[in-house]
Image (cartoon, rainbow, N blue to C red; front, side, top):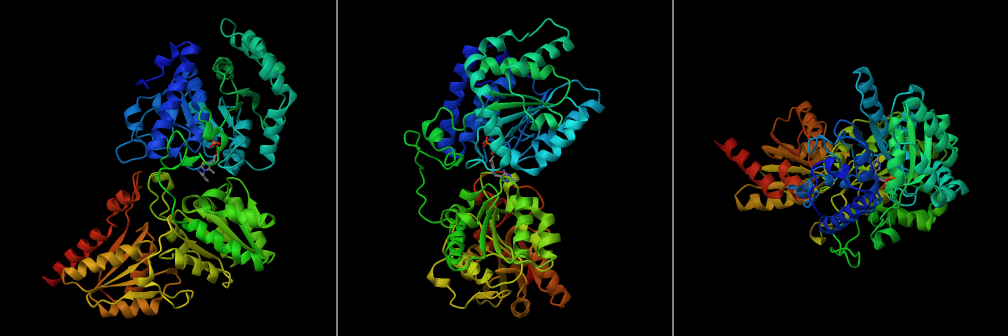
Length: 622
Ligand SMILES: Cc1ncc(C[n+]2csc(CCOP(=O)(O)OP(=O)(O)O)c2C)c(N)n1
């Protein structure tokens, strides 16, 4: 497609030209995502909507805030980032989410759902205090609207009377089909006779709405009147203090531009309910918008993935095991916050639909609900991505841990996550979970141990967190332990006399490789699989640390508050003063790229671990 530097170019285009541009943008998105992977269906659905917003509003003066931010590809293409877009989500290219550092048109950096209305309200209030005059627009999906923060924000914004435009981008889908009572309500609005009549016959009525030439209040009265006459009378958003406009077909550029101009002139909070189609313009994505929400590189002709998914993900391994256990244990329930596919919970849903709960994008509620279930005698398994569990910090601490309830957290996408980048890194869970009393925190080194830990979890009568990365490697028969896994027991995998590396989860593999390299350089390094971050195997820690001069800790977690800090503080308290090296994630946010590139940035690859240990060993010998 052609390079577009800013929206001044768009503003000179006719609707016909804008429609042609929409098709160019679609082709560009499909091409790029087929090469690099990314969020396809949401972006294809938002092409016209983004063009309309850029056409009507003036960026960067006006502030456009995308919820989640996964649908902002068109926005990137309209703001001078075509070349970076072609290397989407790689180290050399743009992020898959808005990033203020990339463009002054990115008003807000997002990644997690349901934040946009709050952030936009904050910007609107700033404008009011600073006596500015610009517009603030939040674009929120119907999926994101299942998240509680949206209601806190609507409630506050509605009573404030502040000038704010919320665009509800309703495609009836979250990642999977949307859930919940409000989703049903929106479906009711979309399917109402009024909307269908509107879609068929409003063209003329809409075009009668005045655009220029009337004093503002007059315009608003007339516009309100005309819009009320042709759009629906909503109860929910109006009761919250918003002027509701909609539903309106988001792909109809001519209508949308007119309505947006009216919304722009309105002097109070407005909610514009826009109906779009997820995956629009690419048949495989239209047919299966859930499968094309987030994709790996694929063949455009068939829609098939280029990489053969030959192994089960760790999430699938974990959920398969709880699905099996639930055959005989009726206490087991599966909970997800809108991520049944990504976490592997889909399988549990198919086998035990009456004990499966998708609560929407509502992690805090999911965890609090699990607390209630555990109080009643059930055994809830909450499958959730590490980064999104951060939303539930308070109920985990205050309700689950304080009451020592047997809720198991299946924490997926833990560690460095690769292309989704800084907003999605799962590198804080060990820090924030292991400081909670009563919590067991575990990290299996491979898929086989993950299964064994699930078996253990059902026997444990306490909160337990099992964290793992997406991919389910099996480290192979060479280091398969036959001993059962017991809470708080580590495993010595390799003996060493000079150095001992205590490694967590995926880092066990790197530590073993590093030990082999070190052996080649005359340094005898041992490796311990520190599979329980809490409680720690303090006996083995002491025993191994006392045998060597140098200890190293390796984890895919923030160094601050992580496993290494905790283990070394214990050694200090026990007056064991080895030389110590810490391998983990430094105190900054790790941006998008491949997992390997991110590990390199953190010094976590096997050769980096080996050479850092060797260097320290040499200085110790001097
Ligand atoms: C707190 C949080 N939980 C889960 C996710 C994962 N997630 C990303 S997009 C998405 C669905 C969003 O649906 P919607 O807002 O309707 O946007 P659409 O993709 O349909 O345009 C989910 C669950 C997230 N980004 N943030």
